[in-house]
Amino acid sequence: MTDAPVDPTSTPAWSRLTALAAGFEPDLRRWFDEDPGRVERLTYVAGDLHVDLSKALLDDAVLADLLALAEEVGVAARRDAMLRGEHINVTEDRAVLHTALRLPADDSLTVDGQDVVADVHEVLGRVYDFAERVRSGAWTGVTGERIRTVVNIGIGGSDLGPVMAYEALAAYRQEGLECRFISNIDPTDAATTLAGLDPATTLFIVSSKTFGTLETLTNARLCKAWLLHGLAGHDEAESVAKHFVAVSTALDKVADFGIDPANAFGFWDWVGGRYSVDSAIGTSLVVAIGPERFAELLGGFHTMDEHFRTAEPAQNVPLLMGLLNVWYTNFLGAESHAVLPYTQLLHRFPAYLQQLTMESNGKGVRWDGSPVSTETGEIFWGEPGTNGQHAFYQLIHQGTRLIPADFIAVANPPYPLEDGGTDVHELFLANFLAQTRALAFGKTADEVRAEGTAEAVVPARVFTGNRPTTSIMAPALTPSVLGQLVALYEHLTFTQGVVWGIDSFDQWGVELGKKLAQEVGPAITGDADALAAQDASTQALIAYYQEHRRR
Ligand code: F6P
Image (cartoon, rainbow, N blue to C red; front, side):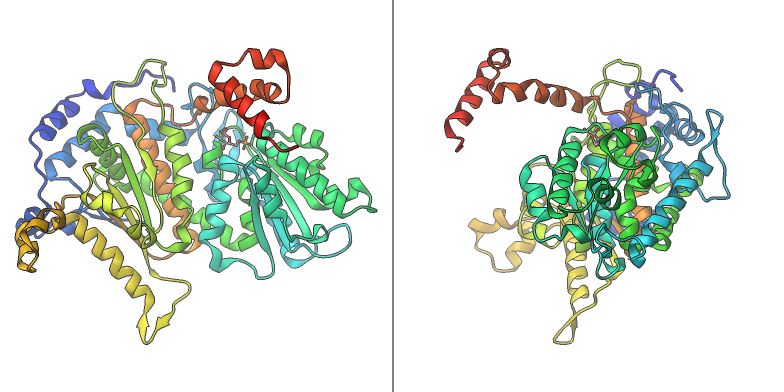
């Protein structure tokens, strides 16, 4: 599907939204007082997620025109083209089918003459079988001992998804079996991650879609050397075969690295790296939580896919949240978006979302090569509450910038604890509720004065309110709920991309730095020609390094 993108700014809906924004005076206090139906009207259900947009800077007129905008730029048509397997990743001429990774086995989807669902479940079956063998102890290392630690080596989408989900689903992990993750080419990462591990009980999963990523291949070689050193005396090929598996779309390169193709799990070029946690890239997670729980995770993804595919626009949560972000970004001037999970289990979720959203929509040209006509790609960031409250919330409450924030909480924590008869999770939830309330409704000067505050300090203690939040709640952070959450953000990212006319599935912006790193490398190691080819600042930084490096 290579149709030219619709310029959103040329649509009637965009003109109306522009006019609405010009006269927009959000007043959440008044809106709540005068409109008793607001909360019910703006609360939505998608799968197990309860999504409350009532504290958003949104009224019925804006909502109607955002939905009209989605219609006028063709979000639904492009969604359907994606789900059919059309090549909507135009700049790479690829289908975009992460949704096929979670289709049930009895479904089918034929793309370019191939039933991709059959392929997906064939690989899943192999991953599940491998994971069961590691979990049961049937898979042993070269000394005959069972595996105690699985180390995933990968970066970007081949790391962030597995780490995020491993942390999120901590309560579901098998005891006595730990996963660790090495991503950074900083040798500190490999050194500290391997510290204390026994090579005889350690298994590495080299995860790389392309199997050409410098960081991952370097770390894989470091780990191979560490393993062979630790297992000196054992046959090297057998050691690698029993302690290394791989996940990649490039199985020929896996073989070149020395990993037996029988110990490799494939996936396909129609899965973007940042959309791959639910492919074989999640193998470390399958080992940790088991096939049954991983299948529940996939089920959760599918639930949200079906919601996005079938829910009418006015009730379609990913569509609404994506459009709301467009409203904040393009009409109200927001530049960033905070994600604030009130569950420590989601402490890597903001980092995961940074790749998902910013690598997808951080683009300045549209899928036909023309420049975008609007701001794109807000900056996603965040930390779990309540830690963030004691760090950066000050700026969200009283700073000069508009920062829409998503608050995420669950009703049931996996580790309920009491403090002198008080349910600590309820204390935690009280903070979630207090923060969204304070942001929405603020505190007036009169309210501050009524507390007996000295007049000179009153301005500093006023909270303007009207700081928008979305509250997302779920019964518990189960594998299914996690899948639903991730798919929610995948689809809202897609929605924004279509409005902006962006190919949300390529990532050319990371290429230049990779290429230059290869060119700079020799300049650091003493190649005079390579050094001469660098700019003056780079030369000076290399000179500093040479001067200070202890040899
Ligand atoms: O450099 C960006 C990127 O291509 C991401 O999109 C990807 O998730 C990551 O690198 C890792 O790539 P690979 O899985 O091919 O090693």
